[in-house]
Image 1 (cartoon, rainbow, N blue to C red):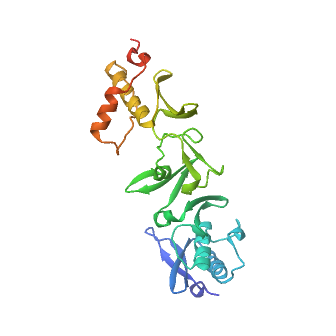
Image 2 (tube, one colour):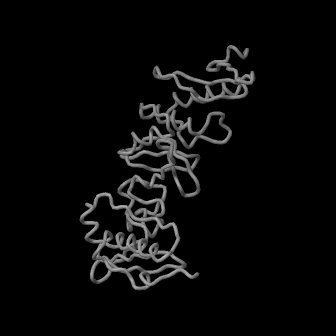
Image 3 (tube, one colour):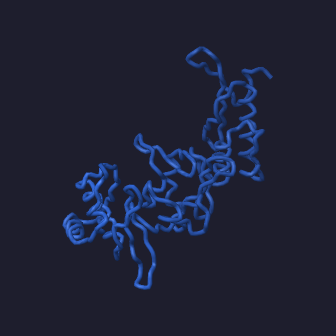
Length: 267
């Protein structure tokens, strides 16, 4: 078959004059781009893989392998379109009551359906155990959607209830500590919150009955240390929902360890 007659293939030219080949398919009146390829035969093979996938329901996400010409992310998108009659440009597959976001083969995140609109329009990027999306030109940690700070540590500040740290459904995440420098512990007297700050080691600021008091005590410790000449880039806690008057009252009343008030940097 001549190159020009290969179904689903359209030649195109780059700015430098070199030729490449676009692959596409139309299904349920939806024109779908399948990617660009150096060879017209690879582009044609991608078309046939897509055509078979879209018409054979016995093919699943697990049928993808490294010998496929079609990109894995596109494989997920097409499988979801076929099974759920919803075309989403992100590599999302809808399950009952939740959805999967496929970063790669076997690398799958789970989210609550409430997040579908957000993630269907986002590309999730991964750096180690950190997952980000581009939002208004900035990289935003997806943990922020759950009220978890960038500096939070898994197992100390938050946990995944079912032990699956790829499962970001809301009911699977429990926040233990919401603020920088604050940890919590259940005691016989109830939950107690400890504020600590790192100077040349970890210093205990104090123990408090609420995380709000501990967070403000941490901020107060920062102010004291700076006034004492400690030149360090501490990250303060932000309590947006607390009225300024209430913040000021707690700030004035909360106690801070003498080790903090007496600390002076060595000259």
